[in-house]
Length: 211
Length: 211
Image (tube, rainbow over all chains, first blue to last red; front, side, top):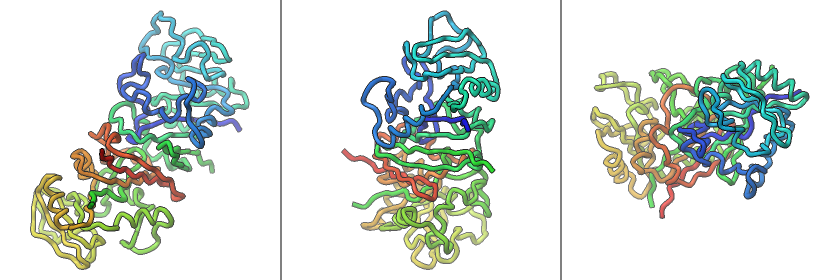
């Protein structure tokens, strides 16, 4: 059965999924690339990339995914009504998604079709509603919840997530957006497995238990 | 050379070293025993205890330790001036320390000698001063920084720690005392190794790098 998955979601050891102060130059604010040093580039920005178990787990995040849902801040640094700035995401002409991508925003706008099969759709919708749309688009494939932090928290709080792959990076970020806020006790709904790899990160797989 | 070590320090995945609301019945507040399920009892409260790597790492926490420094809340639930309640710690007649233990408190009181070599001394002192006292007492052995959370944070902030063994437990506690507050960027002073064990926890060893 198709699943709803969070994949390759890096957090600092103090629980921040992104730093403070997102800008065009720093999508993760003061965290810079430090949360994702283990990951880049997985075919996104050229070599070098991860190896071994890091590579296998990272690639799995792109396996059998038929659609993604992302928050607006993953799509771009803008706030409020969309400016007329020609922004079409951080990823250039051929984004790495190759599927429909549903961007949650209070400011809907026309879809953007990119090369390689990625189309960005903009929805002002609840997590449940967005998921219904994404599942329709994904067919028998899975839906990935792409982040940012706030989106991941919303989907976890609504108990819509089947699998969550966290990557705990040994950094103390100190500031930013915390993934766990408001989620006290959610471990009771999951089975958790961890593996540490030589790159220094810990991969943690949270699998929703079903009675 | 003798070291300053934090050992077997359990934190939730959201970074809390203890829960909210310490009481006589619940030394870790609403966390209950959940942060330490992997650990109990290591000769403290009888079987069953951890096995395998969990056991080896837990026991290492008691190896070559010549003195401990603890915060007042690790010693007892009292606040303010000591009441005349006969309190001598949570650990009964023979505490598991078997060394001098220096309890940091703004309310000094006479030392308490227990069976098995544990003596509690009460100091109103800075981390540096307390460490000097503990190192004198420990001789060639190491000094363990025993917690609670606030004490650990103080010693980390003062850069007095050589080794820190954290145990990351897959719980979202949501409330309590966060170990990482005020410590942004301290990973730059440490080399970090992690190992996941079948009990579900991740052991993380932070070793101070020296140029």
